[in-house]
Image (cartoon, rainbow, N blue to C red):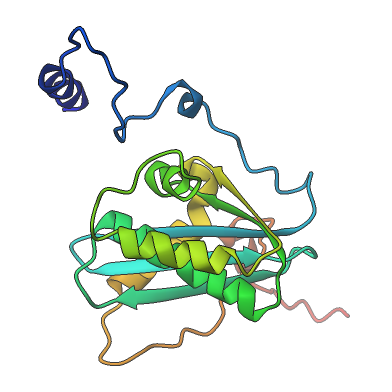
Length: 204
């Protein structure tokens, strides 16, 4: 399907004598590489965000990580018409507002949405009328930081935010739900190793 879409795009935009570069959503050569999130090399606040729109619903999730490696996970379910790109913007805005409430001044924002990251940086145009208000809202929020850096990452490096967004999209509740923080245990042995039964022999 990607090959067919590319073929259709080129067929609809032939190169004539007066050539003008097209401004489209197609990434250029600079977008063909991905910088991985260096979580340990650079201190500072980091924000991971993601949105999930599926048959169950629409959810967004963000994880704000402090300079001391403390994690602040937040998730929400969206109950209005929302495309995948709108969900990404909603998640990003949720994360920035959380950072503002915590008094963060400098932040590194990491997401797996090519469209959003490059639109925010002004590299791609925002043509979708549904996304233009989001773009303006983010621009205003970014003015409240001393420094905001954006970076595109692979989905595999955004697993926590993706899991939160998916969880929120699948929960069905009438009003709102509070899920107690999960206590994650560490097990160094197989489960059956803890099932050894005691055999009393009368000895201390």
